[in-house]
Structure formats: structure tokens, C-alpha cells
Figure 1 (cartoon, one colour):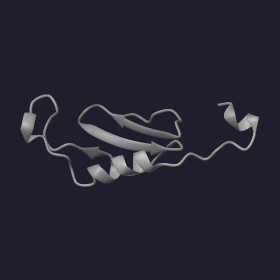
Figure 2 (cartoon, rainbow, N blue to C red):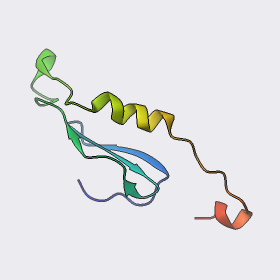
Figure 3 (cartoon, one colour):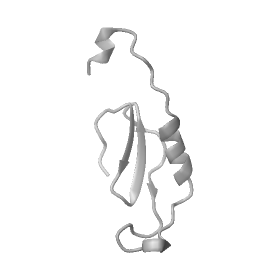
Figure 4 (cartoon, one colour):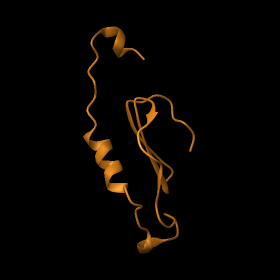
Length: 73
């Protein structure tokens, strides 16, 4: 996976690997499913930490802009 451009809270995936980016920084290690999403079927298993990655993504709290200039990217 390449480095995504700035986004305040981004879950980046190719279907097999998942990374969480917050404020343009990698927030936790890249996690890869155990098996392949295209061929493993019911044998596909999440790697340890998978639930925590999604929890961090869903619980992220944005920092509101303090001025109009901060809203412009």
C-alpha cells in the first residue's frame, strides 16, 4: 500500500490488508487477513487487532476548525 494523501480519518484497504490513517499519519500497524478474500471463503479469518482497528476508526473524534482558513485544504 502506498501512502494516502491527507485525510483526517481514513481506512485504507485492498480487501486483504487494512491500514488506519488519522491526520495524515499511520495510526496503527497494517493488518492483513489470514487467507485471501478472493479464495478463502468461510476460512477467511481476521488477524489479531482487527476489531480494535475498526473501533479506532469509528470512535475517532474530529477537531472542529477554529476559523474559516482552517476549513480550506
